[in-house]
Amino acid sequence: MSNPHNINVNSSKEEEMHTVFDTLIPSLEALSDGFKDMHKQFDKLKKVNDNLVEFNDSFGAFLFGLAANDTTIKWRSPITESEIAKHKKHLNQLQTHEATKAVQIVKQPPHTATAASSSSTAVATASSSSAAKAKSAPRPLLKRPITEKSPENARKKQKTIPEIPKQLVSNRRFEPKVNVTSIINRLPIKYQDRGAPHDHMTSVLKILGLHPEGLTARKLSSETRLAQRFITDCVNTLVFRKEVIKVQEEGQYARYLFDPARFPSVPK
Image (cartoon, rainbow, N blue to C red):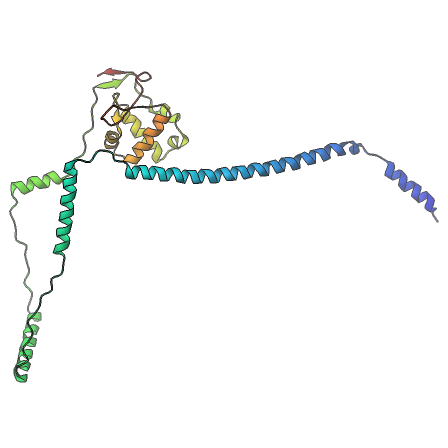
């Protein structure tokens, strides 16, 4: 039998034996504590990022509301007396049109009750036979009366045809030409990617490159055939990026043009 005293001595010797990795234990524990602290810091950063995203979404909706309100209440041009008269005339025409649609009730005279029963039956049979004949007989075709077209009516119809706006021609040109691609490369990424914003910005820059004296937002809209909101978005971005300058003269609409110091022009 083995001595229990020897077994206790051997076990105590094994516990007292040290390995090479024992020296790494404090460093590994400190590294583990550092990773725990870093994980907590990343959790806090994630919360900050989530709050910032929510703020951006809410503030974006607020800015959209301001832009919609500005578009709704802002008058692009002062109201004239002729426009007020046209509006009143249009209201009168609407009221007249609604009055003609009113249903008119036609009152029929009451039938006399003194007619005899035999006469009433005879009238009924006669009316039924006449109705049957009317159904069997072919209905005559109604033709529209042909009216001769007077030269005055022809002129009026020609005036209603929408005319395509003529392109404006400038008496100056840029020397050298404006590099549209390099300007777009300096704009935000949504104008650099292929899509509607890129096409809108390209059209606006090309038209401005043909007019060194500049154009108003309304003329830009007519030249590029784009809606006013797309023109406003493009010119605001160009002005903010200092690619285009805005010139506001008293009593006139603002003009948008390339900076003459950066883009010189010469007469044609």
